[in-house]
Each structure stands twice: as C-alpha cells, then as structure tokens.
Length: 258
Length: 350
Image (cartoon, rainbow over all chains, first blue to last red; front, side):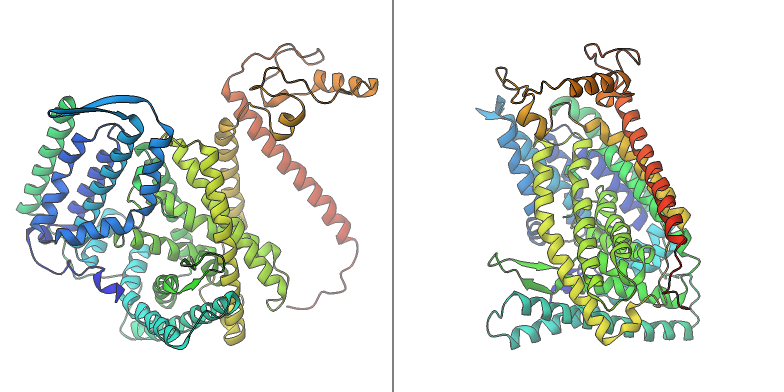
C-alpha cells in the first residue's frame, strides 16, 4: 500500500532522530537557501555541500537506496527543465577534471548544476522528514510561529490520512476487479466522479462522528501535543557543527572551487 | 504542477513566502471566529479526502497510457467556501511538500499561491458569478467548469512569471508561458468536468451538504475582497507592465511595421483627409501616447520618441487599471438605477 512509506523511518531511534525538530527544520531551510543561491556553473562545490545531508542520512540509519529511489521518482519535471538548458545556452567553454579536459557548452554545465542542486536539496528534506516524527515536527513548527489553526489542521490531516487513503484503495481495487475493458471516457468520468463523491460523503460522516467524540472528551480548540521540544547538549553540538561547516563552505570552498 | 526550488532565486522565494504567509495569517485570523471543534474535524478530514481523491485516476481519451486525476481546490472552495477551502488546500500542499517532497521547500509560497489561493478564491468568485439562483440547473455545471478552467490557467500562468522574476529562465518566457497555458487548458477542462460530476453526484445524494447551508461555510466580507483586489491590481499593473514588450503586436506586425525585416513596406495606405485630421488631433491631445510620457507638449505634434523611464510605463499601467475600474463602476451605477426603476415581479421571501 502506498501510504506505508510515508514515514516508516521516522519511528526508529538514532542520534539524528533525537535532535529537536525546530533545529533540524531551521538548519534544513538555511541549507536549502544556501545551495539554491550557488552560481549556475559550479558543480564541484555542490558535492561538498552534499556532505551535510548525507551524514544526517547515514547517522539516522536511513537506507540510501530508498533515498535515491525517492529522488528519481520525483525528478521528471526538473529533468525536463534541466534538459532545456543545453538547447538554449550554446556558449562553448572548456572544462578540465584532473588529467582530462574537453569542450562542453555552458548549457550542459547548467543542466548538471540544476540536477545536482535538486539532489542535494531533496536529500536535505528527506533527511528531515525521515528522522522526525510528524507530530514532533508539527509541535516544533507551532513553537516557531505557524498559526494554530494550520497546526491543528495538519495534525488532523495526518491522523486521518491513512484511514481515508485505505478507503480509496479499497474502491480502486473494486473498480479494477469489476471493469473488464475500457468502457469509454464518459463512463470513466461517471465512475470516477461517483467514487470521489462517495469518498466525500463518507469523509463528512466520519468527520461528524469524530467531532462528537472530540467534544465528548473535552476538546476546546487548543491542540495539545505530547512532544517536548528540548534544546540540550546534542542540539548545541549540532548547531555548532552546522555553523562551522557552512562557514567553511561559504568562505573557503567558494574561493577555491567556484 | 508543483514548482521545485530550482525554479526560483532566494529573493523571489522569500517574497512569495512572505506574500503567502501574510495571506494565510489574514485568512486564519478571519476564520478563527467561525471555526470551532466540529468544523476543525471537518477540515482535517477533508484534507485527507483531497489526498485520497487525488489517487482516484481515470484514463484519458486521446492519450493511451496516461491517466488524469482531480486536484480538488475548486471543489473544496465551492462546498466549504473560499476561506476554509484555502486553509485545507494549503495544508495539503504543505504535506505534499514535506512528506512526499512534491514541490520544493522554498517554492512553498509559490505553490500555495498558484495552486491554493488563486484557484480557491478566483474559482469561487467566478462560480458565484456564473451560477444562477438554483443549484439544480445546468448553469451550475457550466459555472464549475468555467471556474476550474480560468482559475487553473491563471495559477499556471504565474509559474513562468515567478521563474522569470527570479532570473533563472533560459527558455524564453513566452515559450514557457504558452506551453504552461496549453497544458493547463486541458488539465482545467478535465478538472472542471470531474468536479462538475462530483458536484452532480453530491446534489443527488446529499443536497444539504452542497447548498449554502453546510456548517463550515464562511465567505470573506466584501471589504476584504475589494481590498485584496486593489492590492492585486496595483502589483499587477505596476509590476507586470514592466515586462511588456515594445515590439509591435500581432496585428501591427501583419500590416504596419516589422522591426526584424528592414525592407518591409506597410501593406495599407489610407489617403482619406478626415482620417488624417482625426489622427493628428489624437496625436496632439493624447495624454500618455504608447503608454509612456509625452515627449512634447499637449497640443503640439509628437516629436521623435525618446526613451522615457520605466516608471512611466508602470504609472500608465496603474492609471489605466484604475480609470477602467472607475468607468465600470459608473456604468454599473447607471444600469442599477435603470433596473431599480422597474419593479421586479420575482421577489419572494427567502
């Protein structure tokens, strides 16, 4: 079933999993902004930037095959964008890599640059989501200032997404089992609309039951969470290492490699 | 449909994130008055419903092997009202970004605006405008389809604009824009048809949900709508007018001037003296010829155009927008006064 992989790694335990969600989130946003703002022709320095998220993934015991399969699954749109670059930028320059050197157009450099940046930023966000339980992440975001209605909305969505997706998958299996061949566009639309409409009505009925249960248990708008966000020695250590790493990359590596 | 980080530069991402965050803060503050526990549960579950609905795919007629799926923002706006619909779709987009990595983190602001705020609000107001009095007529379905097509096209057209404003695009923006508009026209039609189908199904089975009596429905006040339209007009007219090209448009290109072909002779030559006099009069007294500052005084003929600053184009754009709106308002007042003088035989107590 599709939903089982949503956060199957978030419930493991490792030093990365124990870090505070807010720190991880802020570090990831900062890192993404830095990687995106790299100049469009540098490729070597991106491999240096990749060390950070890679180490988080390794410390968090996330299997790398899963990460790369996921990155490849999301990449079609960005591949189209990247492959459009060689068509539009045909200025020829020569590059050298160790003992080898050859001529290449700037467009291809931009193409690889975009793909490399994409991979690094994806590794960042997969690292965050696979090492943080979603409820902890929400509590951290709430402390960082996200409006409480949106936190409550995200929390309820997460809680019920598996339930509703299960229902949808039952319906899809039933449809497949009952349709022997393609019956025409009109029937496809009619069937799909009926399935979606029926899901909608069931969702509303479930929601009515849930809201009665919530009110019966004393829910009053305030979304309470058990996660305790705690900034301790390991968080300070993580902040210090990230700070030094980013400083080294921005100041020294940029001079050497860009 | 979801933009990735690489399509944006950091300042553009920051700006769109700020705009989206500001809009959301405004919406949540307004919605807080009407959201209590049962509406909260409804909104959460409908967020999960959107995910499930996006999994229900259907084969498309002309393209074997591909299947389409519903996006759902216009459906939510029609049933829940634009405010709550926008909150639900925003939460869906955030989860898609964080957990499914569909859309970059820095592009979250752009994605929320293009796929959440614009389809919900623009779609809802187009739907309300086109729909007639009753929910059960054909006009409702036409309204839904129109709302889907137009709002999705507007959302899609913003993607090349945001990418161009970041300075990241190598592809010329017009090519990108035309591709996006073309693809999303088809997407919009299919979305409209499926949303109309779902709405029809709901009207048959549970009409109480669909009519305006659903518990959670909440609409922005008229003042807020006008204020947001004003802000959008100012930004659009000032900003986007700068992207306007100085090259001749299609019609002018066909008969009058072609800057890329130096031997081109204009195809028509009109020797009528009345027309020449009108032309001269027009030239002397137009306030902002060709959307920039006049190079000679009012009353004299135009000298050779010197390049005026870009700020004049922005001024022209904004002035034009406001003059048009004032004109429309005056026209509406006149029409309203005329129809108020005829008594309406159809007034019944609601």
